[in-house]
Length: 322
Ligand code: GAR
Image 1 (cartoon, rainbow, N blue to C red):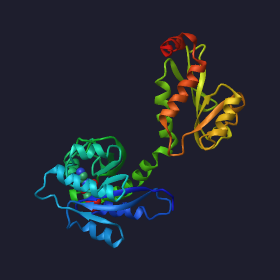
Image 2 (cartoon, protein in one colour):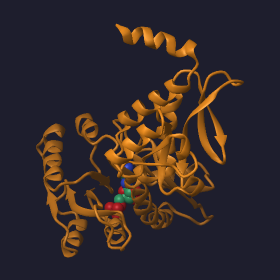
Image 3 (cartoon, rainbow, N blue to C red):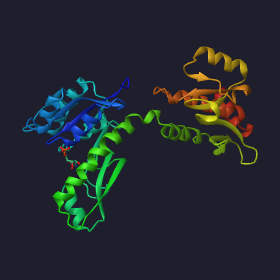
Image 4 (tube, rainbow, N blue to C red):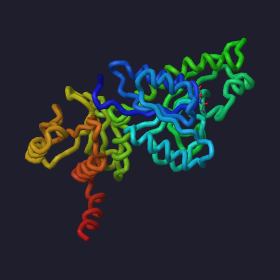
């Protein structure tokens, strides 16, 4: 089993077949998440019985006679108490308060039986049939305050067949849902170790520095400061680049003394890159799952400053004197 698997609470209102798909996916050796709670607003939800039979903690609290905020608070407390880091909505047929959504921002996913942004809400299959769509499908998205909205993390298209009814189509879309949800959730909870995600984060921070641009160097993205003609490199992204392991960023130090001091101070974070290390560059690991992005930004600025033209650093020097 993978250590430190992401702890997920699944919220259901009924059948719970998507919950079951997540639960059985989590039994695989290499699954990066575990289901630690199945919670419902409906104590009669059949999915609860299945979760119990599988030895998963369950929680149910009916919403009748309560206002939305009160009920959401009860659910939130139970989910927190269970130690969940993520919520997977799986047929949870309750609109959530903005407050609840904000508390779980970027940590709550939902599955919806349409190719969003098409057919938010109910009756998605019939609407796809009525529109004569060639494909229906399902989407997994992050939950934001607007219903069935929020960034789409994954979609599966399902071909519509000529004799489809809404029920027949729903059955086929459901098969696709059961494949899509576990795969998308697994990818999402491990995103911080995903080189593409890390590169995106890094790129945003590098390009926020003045007069910088990206140029590939020996097959990896590098960033330069200054005019196109005289610009100098101050950072490189490395994913197993030129013989190095893992995902890291290379930045400039003042020289081999500073490099040695860093390696000595924190060998878990820094290493000397094979190719660039000889000229005093240092690699900072970004795949530990504990990346301090402010620290990375500080390094980028320091490295930028080392090679940026005087006309750019002059203003900064003056500002920093005060
Ligand atoms: C699923 O088809 C899911 O996509 C849908 O409810 C069904 C729940 O089935 N969700 C929505 O419509 C959310 N807007 P399940 O309980 O068997 O997982």
